[in-house]
Image (cartoon, rainbow, N blue to C red; front, side, top):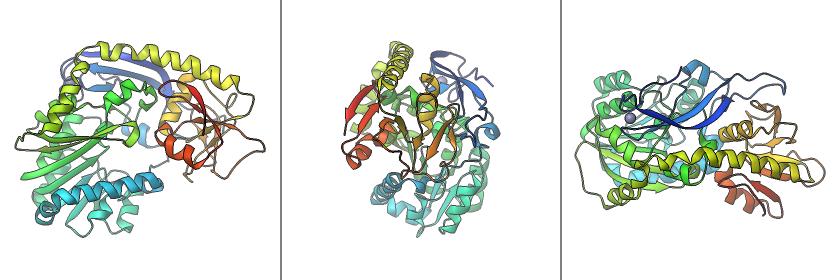
Length: 395
Ligand SMILES: [Zn+2]
Protein backbone atom coordinates (compact mmCIF):
# COMPACT_ATOMS: atom_id res chain seq x y z
CA UNK A 1 0.00 0.00 0.00
CA UNK A 2 1.34 3.38 -0.95
CA UNK A 3 1.11 6.17 1.58
CA UNK A 4 -0.75 9.27 0.36
CA UNK A 5 -0.61 11.36 3.54
CA UNK A 6 2.00 12.11 6.21
CA UNK A 7 2.29 9.61 9.08
CA UNK A 8 2.66 12.40 11.64
CA UNK A 9 0.51 15.34 10.47
CA UNK A 10 -1.76 13.88 7.78
CA UNK A 11 -0.71 16.37 5.09
CA UNK A 12 -0.95 15.03 1.50
CA UNK A 13 2.10 17.14 0.55
CA UNK A 14 4.65 14.30 0.25
CA UNK A 15 7.58 14.89 -2.08
CA UNK A 16 9.63 11.83 -3.14
CA UNK A 17 13.39 12.39 -3.22
CA UNK A 18 14.93 8.91 -3.13
CA UNK A 19 13.95 5.82 -5.12
CA UNK A 20 15.98 2.69 -4.40
CA UNK A 21 13.89 0.52 -6.73
CA UNK A 22 12.28 -2.73 -5.58
CA UNK A 23 14.02 -4.47 -2.68
CA UNK A 24 13.29 -7.54 -0.54
CA UNK A 25 12.29 -7.23 3.13
CA UNK A 26 15.65 -6.65 4.77
CA UNK A 27 15.62 -9.39 7.41
CA UNK A 28 13.63 -12.02 5.46
CA UNK A 29 16.71 -14.27 5.22
CA UNK A 30 16.20 -17.18 2.84
CA UNK A 31 16.91 -20.84 3.57
CA UNK A 32 18.35 -21.58 0.14
CA UNK A 33 20.41 -19.40 -2.22
CA UNK A 34 17.84 -19.70 -5.02
CA UNK A 35 14.75 -18.95 -2.92
CA UNK A 36 12.82 -16.09 -4.47
CA UNK A 37 12.47 -13.01 -2.24
CA UNK A 38 9.39 -10.89 -2.93
CA UNK A 39 10.40 -7.32 -3.71
CA UNK A 40 8.58 -4.13 -2.78
CA UNK A 41 9.22 -0.49 -3.75
CA UNK A 42 11.62 1.47 -1.56
CA UNK A 43 10.89 5.16 -2.02
CA UNK A 44 11.41 7.95 0.48
CA UNK A 45 9.47 11.23 0.68
CA UNK A 46 9.58 14.34 2.83
CA UNK A 47 6.41 16.00 4.18
CA UNK A 48 6.20 19.58 2.97
CA UNK A 49 4.33 20.60 6.12
CA UNK A 50 6.07 18.97 9.12
CA UNK A 51 9.29 17.75 7.39
CA UNK A 52 8.91 14.15 8.52
CA UNK A 53 10.83 11.92 6.12
CA UNK A 54 9.00 8.65 5.53
CA UNK A 55 8.76 5.55 3.37
CA UNK A 56 5.98 5.70 0.80
CA UNK A 57 5.40 1.94 0.74
CA UNK A 58 3.64 0.76 3.90
CA UNK A 59 3.73 -3.03 4.07
CA UNK A 60 1.23 -4.82 6.32
CA UNK A 61 2.70 -5.98 9.64
CA UNK A 62 2.23 -9.68 8.80
CA UNK A 63 4.27 -9.30 5.59
CA UNK A 64 6.90 -7.21 7.32
CA UNK A 65 7.33 -9.02 10.60
CA UNK A 66 6.18 -12.52 9.71
CA UNK A 67 9.57 -13.46 8.32
CA UNK A 68 10.43 -16.07 10.93
CA UNK A 69 13.38 -14.06 12.14
CA UNK A 70 13.13 -11.96 15.28
CA UNK A 71 15.61 -9.35 16.33
CA UNK A 72 16.92 -9.95 19.86
CA UNK A 73 18.59 -6.89 21.38
CA UNK A 74 20.74 -8.91 23.74
CA UNK A 75 22.33 -10.84 20.83
CA UNK A 76 24.53 -7.82 20.16
CA UNK A 77 27.18 -7.14 22.81
CA UNK A 78 27.74 -3.48 21.82
CA UNK A 79 23.95 -2.92 21.92
CA UNK A 80 23.68 -4.48 25.40
CA UNK A 81 26.47 -2.21 26.65
CA UNK A 82 24.62 0.73 25.13
CA UNK A 83 21.39 -0.25 26.91
CA UNK A 84 23.19 -0.52 30.24
CA UNK A 85 24.64 2.99 29.86
CA UNK A 86 21.23 4.24 28.69
CA UNK A 87 19.53 2.86 31.81
CA UNK A 88 22.18 4.44 34.03
CA UNK A 89 21.58 7.82 32.35
CA UNK A 90 17.81 7.55 32.86
CA UNK A 91 18.16 6.49 36.49
CA UNK A 92 20.65 9.29 37.22
CA UNK A 93 18.01 11.83 36.20
CA UNK A 94 14.71 10.15 37.03
CA UNK A 95 15.16 7.44 39.69
CA UNK A 96 12.89 9.38 42.06
CA UNK A 97 10.15 9.78 39.47
CA UNK A 98 10.33 6.08 38.54
CA UNK A 99 10.26 5.14 42.24
CA UNK A 100 7.05 7.15 42.69
CA UNK A 101 5.21 6.41 39.44
CA UNK A 102 6.88 3.55 37.57
CA UNK A 103 8.26 3.13 34.07
CA UNK A 104 6.92 1.77 30.77
CA UNK A 105 9.10 0.78 27.87
CA UNK A 106 7.41 0.77 24.47
CA UNK A 107 9.12 -1.76 22.18
CA UNK A 108 10.83 -3.57 25.04
CA UNK A 109 12.01 -6.48 22.81
CA UNK A 110 13.77 -9.13 24.94
CA UNK A 111 14.06 -6.86 27.99
CA UNK A 112 17.68 -5.99 27.39
CA UNK A 113 17.08 -2.38 28.49
CA UNK A 114 14.03 -2.98 30.70
CA UNK A 115 15.88 -5.49 32.94
CA UNK A 116 17.81 -2.56 34.43
CA UNK A 117 14.51 -1.22 35.83
CA UNK A 118 13.28 -4.50 37.31
CA UNK A 119 13.55 -3.34 40.90
CA UNK A 120 10.96 -0.64 40.16
CA UNK A 121 7.32 -0.87 39.08
CA UNK A 122 7.77 -1.47 35.36
CA UNK A 123 6.03 -2.72 32.22
CA UNK A 124 7.30 -3.54 28.74
CA UNK A 125 5.03 -3.46 25.67
CA UNK A 126 6.07 -5.33 22.55
CA UNK A 127 4.12 -7.27 19.89
CA UNK A 128 6.83 -9.86 19.15
CA UNK A 129 6.24 -12.98 21.22
CA UNK A 130 9.69 -14.62 20.97
CA UNK A 131 11.53 -11.65 22.45
CA UNK A 132 8.55 -10.99 24.77
CA UNK A 133 8.85 -14.44 26.41
CA UNK A 134 12.63 -13.98 26.63
CA UNK A 135 12.00 -10.73 28.55
CA UNK A 136 9.62 -12.55 30.92
CA UNK A 137 12.28 -15.21 31.48
CA UNK A 138 14.51 -12.41 32.69
CA UNK A 139 11.88 -11.40 35.21
CA UNK A 140 10.43 -8.45 33.31
CA UNK A 141 6.70 -7.68 33.28
CA UNK A 142 5.68 -7.55 29.59
CA UNK A 143 2.44 -7.10 27.63
CA UNK A 144 2.72 -8.64 24.16
CA UNK A 145 0.61 -6.22 22.12
CA UNK A 146 1.26 -3.64 19.42
CA UNK A 147 1.49 -0.20 21.07
CA UNK A 148 -0.92 2.64 20.33
CA UNK A 149 -3.54 4.83 21.97
CA UNK A 150 -5.88 1.86 22.69
CA UNK A 151 -3.38 -0.17 24.68
CA UNK A 152 -2.11 2.98 26.43
CA UNK A 153 -5.64 3.68 27.61
CA UNK A 154 -5.90 0.15 29.03
CA UNK A 155 -2.54 0.37 30.80
CA UNK A 156 -3.49 3.71 32.33
CA UNK A 157 -6.82 2.35 33.52
CA UNK A 158 -5.10 -0.67 35.11
CA UNK A 159 -2.02 0.97 36.55
CA UNK A 160 -2.58 4.71 36.64
CA UNK A 161 -0.39 7.37 35.00
CA UNK A 162 3.31 6.51 34.67
CA UNK A 163 6.39 8.55 35.63
CA UNK A 164 8.72 7.66 32.76
CA UNK A 165 7.93 6.29 29.30
CA UNK A 166 10.82 5.03 27.20
CA UNK A 167 10.58 4.47 23.44
CA UNK A 168 14.00 3.48 22.20
CA UNK A 169 14.28 3.14 18.40
CA UNK A 170 10.56 2.50 18.11
CA UNK A 171 9.05 5.55 16.40
CA UNK A 172 11.05 4.85 13.25
CA UNK A 173 9.24 1.54 12.83
CA UNK A 174 5.61 2.42 13.53
CA UNK A 175 3.06 2.75 10.75
CA UNK A 176 1.19 5.56 12.51
CA UNK A 177 3.51 8.04 14.25
CA UNK A 178 0.55 10.09 15.45
CA UNK A 179 -1.17 7.12 17.18
CA UNK A 180 2.08 6.05 18.87
CA UNK A 181 2.73 9.54 20.25
CA UNK A 182 -0.91 9.82 21.35
CA UNK A 183 -0.40 6.57 23.32
CA UNK A 184 2.81 7.83 24.91
CA UNK A 185 1.11 11.08 25.94
CA UNK A 186 -1.84 9.12 27.38
CA UNK A 187 0.46 7.02 29.61
CA UNK A 188 2.17 10.06 31.10
CA UNK A 189 1.20 11.65 34.39
CA UNK A 190 1.42 15.45 34.71
CA UNK A 191 5.02 15.43 35.94
CA UNK A 192 6.10 12.53 33.70
CA UNK A 193 8.75 12.49 30.99
CA UNK A 194 9.01 10.39 27.84
CA UNK A 195 12.49 9.57 26.59
CA UNK A 196 12.43 8.88 22.88
CA UNK A 197 15.47 7.93 20.83
CA UNK A 198 15.41 7.71 17.04
CA UNK A 199 17.95 7.54 14.26
CA UNK A 200 18.97 11.07 13.28
CA UNK A 201 18.01 12.05 9.75
CA UNK A 202 20.68 14.77 9.26
CA UNK A 203 23.39 12.14 9.82
CA UNK A 204 21.76 9.88 7.23
CA UNK A 205 21.75 12.74 4.72
CA UNK A 206 25.33 13.96 5.30
CA UNK A 207 26.72 10.40 5.39
CA UNK A 208 24.91 9.34 2.19
CA UNK A 209 23.59 6.46 4.28
CA UNK A 210 20.81 5.44 1.89
CA UNK A 211 21.26 1.85 3.07
CA UNK A 212 19.49 2.79 6.34
CA UNK A 213 16.33 2.80 4.22
CA UNK A 214 14.47 -0.53 4.35
CA UNK A 215 10.82 -1.48 4.72
CA UNK A 216 10.91 -1.94 8.50
CA UNK A 217 12.38 1.56 8.88
CA UNK A 218 9.38 3.70 8.07
CA UNK A 219 10.17 7.13 9.54
CA UNK A 220 13.31 9.25 9.67
CA UNK A 221 13.37 12.08 12.22
CA UNK A 222 15.13 15.35 12.84
CA UNK A 223 14.55 17.24 16.08
CA UNK A 224 12.36 19.63 14.08
CA UNK A 225 10.03 16.93 12.72
CA UNK A 226 9.89 15.03 16.02
CA UNK A 227 9.10 18.25 17.86
CA UNK A 228 6.26 19.04 15.46
CA UNK A 229 4.84 15.50 15.76
CA UNK A 230 5.00 15.57 19.57
CA UNK A 231 3.42 19.03 19.79
CA UNK A 232 0.28 17.66 18.11
CA UNK A 233 -0.21 15.56 21.27
CA UNK A 234 0.57 18.29 23.80
CA UNK A 235 4.16 17.20 24.38
CA UNK A 236 7.13 19.58 24.50
CA UNK A 237 10.77 18.78 23.87
CA UNK A 238 12.55 19.75 27.10
CA UNK A 239 15.95 18.20 26.35
CA UNK A 240 17.78 16.61 23.42
CA UNK A 241 21.16 15.06 22.82
CA UNK A 242 22.88 13.46 19.87
CA UNK A 243 24.19 9.91 20.35
CA UNK A 244 26.29 7.66 18.12
CA UNK A 245 24.01 4.64 17.89
CA UNK A 246 23.13 3.34 14.39
CA UNK A 247 25.28 5.81 12.53
CA UNK A 248 23.87 8.78 14.49
CA UNK A 249 20.79 9.08 16.68
CA UNK A 250 18.99 11.71 18.75
CA UNK A 251 17.59 11.17 22.25
CA UNK A 252 14.78 13.55 23.12
CA UNK A 253 13.01 14.13 26.44
CA UNK A 254 9.32 15.05 26.17
CA UNK A 255 7.15 16.54 28.91
CA UNK A 256 3.69 18.06 29.27
CA UNK A 257 5.12 21.37 30.50
CA UNK A 258 7.55 23.37 28.31
CA UNK A 259 11.06 24.08 29.64
CA UNK A 260 13.98 26.13 28.38
CA UNK A 261 16.87 24.05 27.07
CA UNK A 262 20.01 25.46 25.46
CA UNK A 263 20.76 22.05 23.94
CA UNK A 264 17.36 21.94 22.24
CA UNK A 265 17.77 25.46 20.86
CA UNK A 266 21.26 24.69 19.55
CA UNK A 267 20.21 21.51 17.72
CA UNK A 268 17.04 23.13 16.40
CA UNK A 269 19.09 25.98 14.91
CA UNK A 270 21.54 23.54 13.34
CA UNK A 271 18.65 21.99 11.41
CA UNK A 272 17.49 25.04 9.50
CA UNK A 273 19.01 23.66 6.30
CA UNK A 274 16.42 20.84 6.39
CA UNK A 275 13.68 23.35 5.59
CA UNK A 276 14.90 23.59 2.00
CA UNK A 277 14.13 20.76 -0.43
CA UNK A 278 17.76 21.09 -1.53
CA UNK A 279 18.71 19.18 1.64
CA UNK A 280 17.05 16.07 0.18
CA UNK A 281 17.23 16.26 -3.58
CA UNK A 282 20.94 15.43 -4.00
CA UNK A 283 20.52 12.10 -2.19
CA UNK A 284 19.48 10.18 -5.31
CA UNK A 285 22.54 11.26 -7.29
CA UNK A 286 24.88 10.36 -4.42
CA UNK A 287 23.27 6.93 -3.98
CA UNK A 288 23.57 6.26 -7.73
CA UNK A 289 27.22 7.27 -7.66
CA UNK A 290 27.94 4.98 -4.66
CA UNK A 291 26.27 2.08 -6.50
CA UNK A 292 28.53 2.52 -9.52
CA UNK A 293 31.76 3.05 -7.55
CA UNK A 294 31.17 0.25 -5.02
CA UNK A 295 30.55 -2.35 -7.70
CA UNK A 296 33.70 -1.22 -9.50
CA UNK A 297 35.77 -1.58 -6.30
CA UNK A 298 34.41 -5.08 -5.64
CA UNK A 299 35.15 -6.21 -9.20
CA UNK A 300 38.70 -4.77 -9.05
CA UNK A 301 39.79 -6.97 -6.13
CA UNK A 302 42.10 -9.91 -6.93
CA UNK A 303 41.11 -11.73 -3.72
CA UNK A 304 37.73 -13.12 -2.69
CA UNK A 305 35.41 -10.43 -1.32
CA UNK A 306 33.45 -11.32 1.84
CA UNK A 307 30.64 -9.26 3.37
CA UNK A 308 31.05 -8.35 7.05
CA UNK A 309 27.71 -8.16 8.88
CA UNK A 310 24.29 -9.31 7.61
CA UNK A 311 22.60 -6.17 8.94
CA UNK A 312 19.28 -4.94 7.56
CA UNK A 313 21.18 -2.16 5.82
CA UNK A 314 23.39 -4.77 4.11
CA UNK A 315 20.30 -6.09 2.30
CA UNK A 316 19.45 -2.62 0.97
CA UNK A 317 23.05 -1.87 0.01
CA UNK A 318 23.65 -5.11 -1.91
CA UNK A 319 20.28 -5.17 -3.65
CA UNK A 320 20.48 -1.54 -4.72
CA UNK A 321 24.06 -1.98 -5.94
CA UNK A 322 23.27 -5.23 -7.79
CA UNK A 323 25.85 -7.21 -5.79
CA UNK A 324 25.07 -10.93 -5.43
CA UNK A 325 26.75 -14.29 -4.83
CA UNK A 326 28.25 -13.79 -8.27
CA UNK A 327 30.45 -11.03 -6.82
CA UNK A 328 30.66 -11.81 -3.09
CA UNK A 329 31.73 -15.19 -1.69
CA UNK A 330 29.83 -15.22 1.62
CA UNK A 331 28.93 -13.06 4.60
CA UNK A 332 30.12 -13.41 8.19
CA UNK A 333 27.74 -12.53 11.04
CA UNK A 334 27.84 -13.40 14.75
CA UNK A 335 24.04 -13.86 15.12
CA UNK A 336 23.32 -17.62 15.27
CA UNK A 337 19.76 -17.21 13.89
CA UNK A 338 21.14 -15.74 10.66
CA UNK A 339 23.89 -18.29 10.15
CA UNK A 340 23.18 -20.95 7.52
CA UNK A 341 20.69 -18.64 5.81
CA UNK A 342 21.15 -16.19 2.93
CA UNK A 343 20.98 -12.42 2.45
CA UNK A 344 17.60 -11.73 0.77
CA UNK A 345 17.73 -11.13 -2.97
CA UNK A 346 21.43 -11.98 -3.28
CA UNK A 347 21.90 -15.72 -2.65
CA UNK A 348 24.91 -14.85 -0.44
CA UNK A 349 25.30 -17.43 2.37
CA UNK A 350 25.74 -16.22 5.97
CA UNK A 351 28.44 -17.96 7.99
CA UNK A 352 29.69 -17.79 11.57
CA UNK A 353 32.61 -15.52 12.30
CA UNK A 354 34.84 -18.55 12.71
CA UNK A 355 34.30 -19.60 9.11
CA UNK A 356 37.15 -18.78 6.76
CA UNK A 357 38.53 -20.07 3.51
CA UNK A 358 42.27 -20.37 2.83
CA UNK A 359 43.84 -17.08 1.77
CA UNK A 360 43.03 -13.62 2.99
CA UNK A 361 39.76 -12.22 1.75
CA UNK A 362 38.90 -8.55 1.32
CA UNK A 363 35.96 -7.56 3.55
CA UNK A 364 33.08 -5.41 2.38
CA UNK A 365 31.85 -3.66 5.53
CA UNK A 366 28.08 -4.08 5.75
CA UNK A 367 27.84 -3.16 9.46
CA UNK A 368 29.73 0.10 8.95
CA UNK A 369 28.34 1.63 12.18
CA UNK A 370 30.65 -0.79 14.04
CA UNK A 371 33.56 -0.29 11.61
CA UNK A 372 35.94 1.23 14.13
CA UNK A 373 35.51 -1.54 16.72
CA UNK A 374 35.55 -4.32 14.12
CA UNK A 375 38.64 -3.06 12.30
CA UNK A 376 40.56 -2.54 15.53
CA UNK A 377 39.81 -6.15 16.48
CA UNK A 378 40.99 -7.41 13.06
CA UNK A 379 44.31 -5.70 12.27
CA UNK A 380 46.11 -6.21 8.95
CA UNK A 381 42.91 -6.84 6.94
CA UNK A 382 41.80 -5.07 3.77
CA UNK A 383 38.33 -3.51 3.86
CA UNK A 384 35.97 -1.87 1.41
CA UNK A 385 33.94 0.79 3.22
CA UNK A 386 30.75 1.65 1.28
CA UNK A 387 29.53 4.70 3.24
CA UNK A 388 29.81 7.74 3.05
CA UNK A 389 31.78 7.11 -0.17
CA UNK A 390 33.28 3.78 -1.26
CA UNK A 391 36.97 3.41 -0.37
CA UNK A 392 39.52 0.72 0.37
CA UNK A 393 41.44 0.81 3.69
CA UNK A 394 43.74 -1.54 5.61
CA UNK A 395 43.11 -2.03 9.34
ZN1 LIG B 1 3.77 15.89 7.97
